[in-house]
Length: 124
Image (cartoon, rainbow, N blue to C red; front, side, top):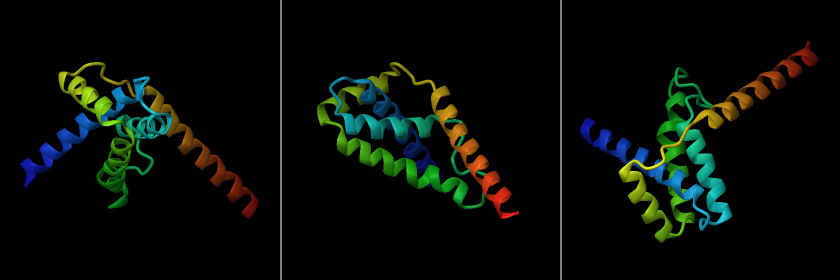
């Protein structure tokens, strides 16, 4: 069972890398690019919107949201482009850097913290 989960995780990681490559391909439709960018940015980000220490919910994003996002992006990308990107990902071509995704997630957390502070200030 554990070995099966490890294989699934490796395939998911390779698929996310292929989506990154597809996002950068000029032949990929705009909607597919947007979905792929969001999925890849979130998947490769070192920071989660729901922190992992939160029981159950912390891992929910990794176990459910990322695979669902990958499935949606795969449906939106033309099969020929996706096949080429999967082959490149298998070779390890052009690995993504996650700094931008980390900045976006941190910005979301900061915005939520500011909104909470403003709400609490008005409440008290």
